[in-house]
Image 1 (cartoon, one colour):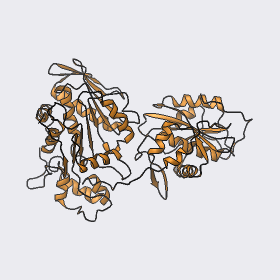
Image 2: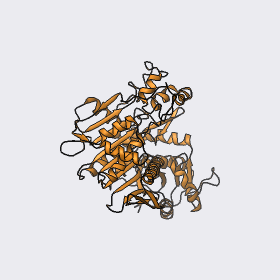
Image 3: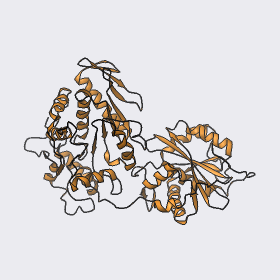
Amino acid sequence: MLISPPGSLHGARRPRLEVAPPYSYSLGQEAIELARRAGLVLDFWQQQALDLMLAVREDGRWACFEYAEIVARQNGKGSLLEARALAGLFLLGERLIMWSAHEYKTAMEGFRRFRDLLKNLGESVNDNLIDVGGVLVKVSNTNGEESFERLDTGQRVKFIARSKGSGRGFSGDVNFIDEAFAYTPDQHAALMPTMSARPNPQIIYTSSPPLTGDTGETLYALRERAEAGGDDSLGFRDWGAAGDLDHLDGLNLDDRELWAATNPALGVRITEETIARERRSMTALDFARERLGVWPHKIAGGGAIDVKQFAKLTDPDSQAGADVVFAVEVAYDRSSSTIAAWSVRADELGHAEIIDQRPGTDWVVKRLVELRDRWNPVAFGLDGKGPALSLAFDLEAAGIKRSEDPEKPVRGDLVVLSLPEMAAACGQLLDAITQESFRHLDDPDLNAAVAGAKTRPVGDVEVWGRRNAAAEISPLTAVTVARRVYVTRIDAINKPQRKPLAAWA
């Protein structure tokens, strides 16, 4: 249904950049009709996307092993995934469709929309069962296990929030990468091998452009392949305006024809008035990226830490001294938690170690209490502006408390770093890496965090950036906190008789 008045602008019918491999025919029209029966009436541009997405080669395999749709927010990217999932579940016989998003709330929004489509297509038997033309579909709504399953065939559509290891342990016929701007190379490397055993797999990316020029590596790589040409397994459509966010002088942000060219849903679910309000209230850079789909200029090079320099600090035989600080950090999506330690060796070099890393957070307090009872640590630390702050109440209830008198700390106190302290901690760790003043055990999770680490500005200083990191950085953050707490507390406590710290287990 059109929402704009007659005579107003309507969105473009084709994107600025479109790459399509050769194919024999498409199953798109069948998928479009099924979506319509479920109450999902696709726009012209969405229908064209589905036609290309479901294009088939002469040998019966998908023409687009990879398919990407890059378009500004609120244009209707999610409807492409909904229609594709319906087709996979009811028309194509695909065993497992994995729908992943960067954030849990986004994955759950997709889950709810898909559930509504199934109800439109059939009728609810009860809260956990939908009858679709005689086919019973089980609805699983358990936190972290949201999915739909055909009881006659066992086919499933599963919804997840991505994490460092979320690509491992499943093998989908189709994998949806929603919010692909936050899809990291580590996640891609984990996912791709799981598809190799499937007879006709497909991976579908939907996204707006990357947030910054030093993130979105996978999305940039897709665009580079599309622009280079010659990839006969890639379908790629980008609706964004040409250029980059560093060079907006040549772009007329008030050009309404440009609004229409970059927003195919203009006149259907987005109005000129809405975009005009956004133009007035947003910065030029934000408006260009979020509404006109302009990409940031790609920043070449690595992350915040020189991985070769960090590798020079490896010492598999490194051993902690008698005094130790333990710090905990929780992953940004809360999928896992990490406990790290910092100590000083007999040769006065620092010692960094990942003590424990497991899924979730429910194990952390018990484990820290065990470490306290066994090692009588200098202190425990966490970032007061990070996800781990949620554990502070439970830690204090378990006896790991903040100092009653900050001027007279005692062993085993909980230290919660403020934002300025965390900024100092990051800078100090970067200096320690450059100065080679500590050693680590070559832990793979810590190495991955170091390789993917980015910083974000806070005033005139920087802290680790969780949202823009190219990997899960909780191991690095935990080490950073542990070091800061150690160097600020070790001289302020009364030390008991020292004894070797032989093992962490």
